[in-house]
Length: 177
Image 1 (cartoon, rainbow, N blue to C red):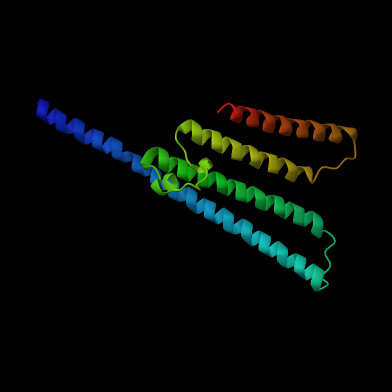
Image 2 (tube, helix red, strand yellow):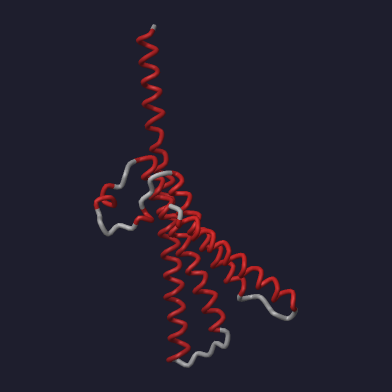
């Protein structure tokens, strides 16, 4: 009875250990999402450059171009940052659950931000990029604020203070590592 129990236990442990490969679905999905966001943001910038060319050299008038352009650029930065989150997430999951990325560890020029050694590393790196996404989203929304009453100016000041404090404390927490 002990021999069959040992076989069942070993088989179950083999299955349990190899079930970590399901993480590859999250890795691949994150990489696809990252590529989509990067291409969509790049396409948006090419379109914006074309609009600028039309306006400047072909005489096509667009009085709202500056405001629209700033909004599109901020949206593209937001998409690039979210794509970066997906890239860091994919690399981190792969390194934590599947295998170390040998080529990255052998490359002296590799960025440390992409080398994840623990779940806390992954969490910290993702939190910093997500904070940057929130900062970009804040400034994107600021474009639409009207300063027709003093309360809006107060809210803007409080918002800027909160963003500044979050960046300050994030930077301070990074200094301890």
